[in-house]
Amino acid sequence: MKGIEVKILPGLLVQLHRLGAPAPTEISIVPGNISSANNKQELTQSSESDTIRTLLTQNLIAHKDLFDDEGEIEYIQNYSDDWFGPCILIPIAATIQNPNVTSIILGLITNYIYDAFKGSKGQSASLSIIKETANGEFRSISYNGPVEGLSELAEILKNAE
Image (cartoon, rainbow, N blue to C red):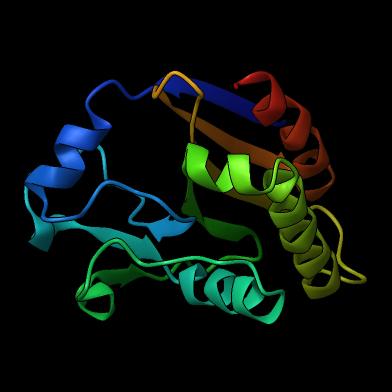
């Protein structure tokens, strides 16, 4: 069963500042618990974070880590046949520069997962995207369900603008 959850994150910029990160201007892979961490030491990231950074780099999609010490943020390894993706932050500046960037990123991730699960059946995927709207509001769209359902995320994210 697939599930999509959309939440508004009204204090995200304040939280980023409190944790020592600048306001986002480029696509970033951020810790999955960015909204709830009380301090920098509590931040955790998906073990697939580096995979997505590599996909972005290989496809010449500009991205930047929000924290200088990204390597010190604890990785969470999920031992499962399912795919647990990272949290991707897409600021409005990236969307203005390339209106299709969200769809491109989702396409890269979907293709990567299809290749990784080739021949397998029944695996699920989870992914979170935080997207800044034109009015400066941040919305978190989280997906958890069959790999095939990731393609629906692009339309939901487009409507979240």
